[in-house]
Structures are given as structure tokens and as C-alpha cells.
Length: 124
Image 1 (cartoon, helix red, strand yellow):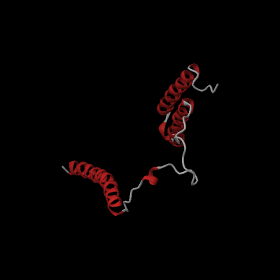
Image 2: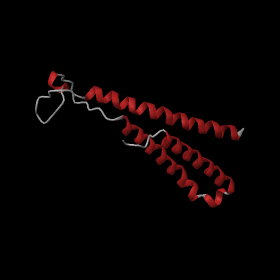
Image 3: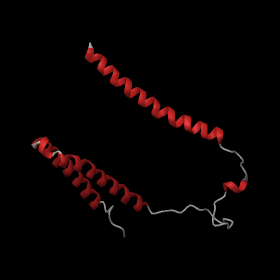
Image 4: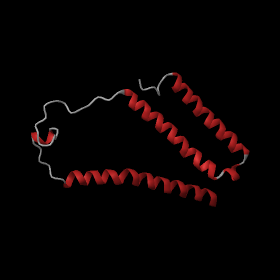
């Protein structure tokens, strides 16, 4: 019975943090909207270009390759996040963790080879 109370207390703590994580930003945004000055006029909605009146749309189109390259960087950067704790605790984890990490790295290498074959990493 004591073990059941311990688990219920853990879930209660998670529930409290979840409620606080949702409630605090909502309350902060509500008070910000309530307290800020609201004086809309047309010139506030124009693009600021050093005091010069804007003469065209300020949006710039980027090549899709930049986004794909950034996504590839994020994927392989996250790999190092998973490799570092494994390397620190390698002696405690044993051969099973070594095999798991080799499978993980092998899957990432397969993804890199796939991206290379699809010419995702080619800039021209």
C-alpha cells in the first residue's frame, strides 16, 4: 500500500508541473495583453527600412537546399547528444550498450548514405 502512495505522489508531482507549465505562460500572456498600451495606426504595420518608405515586399525567398542542409545538420548534431552520455558511462553499461550504439550509428550511416545518393548534400 505504501508503494502505491509513492507512485501516486510521483504522478501528482508530474501533474502539478504540467499544470504550472501550461498555466504560467497563459497568465503571463493575459497580463501582458491587459497591461500593454493599445494604440493601433497604419504606420505601425509597415515594414521599417531605415525611415524610408517601403516600396516592395520585404520577404526574401531562400533556396530549399538551405533548409534541407540545416535539417541534416540537426539530425547529425542530435547524434552527438546521444553518443556523449553513452561514452561517459561506457564501462558501466557493458557489451550490450556497445552493440546498441553500433546499431544506432549504423542506422545513421544508412541515412547519410541515402542522403548522399539522393544528392541532398550537393550544392550545385
